[in-house]
Image 1: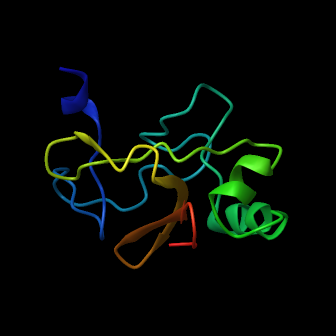
Image 2 (image 1 turned 120 degrees about the vertical axis):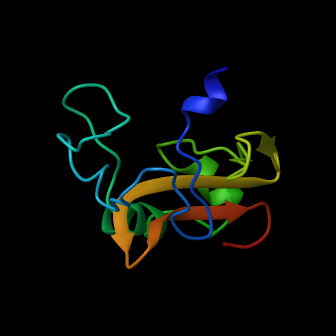
Length: 112
């Protein structure tokens, strides 16, 4: 099943990779970069710059941006199932802070 191949991370790095390696997605040549060749996840600073350009700091601002970000929900860190579809948007970065992956999150009313 496809969901078994998803690295399920939420509320800190809860990964099955042993030994734990918190830098697998760093950069276009990162070991497990999930993007096509030559592409990478944005950094936390790049997400913040994008967010600062939104007309409002919520789902309306995210969708109104050139990226047209949607409230696509999230994958469960336990089993990879989808939740909060249509309510919350979560987008990861390639930045790690201590043991947490950084990114951008928002809902229909307030930033998360």
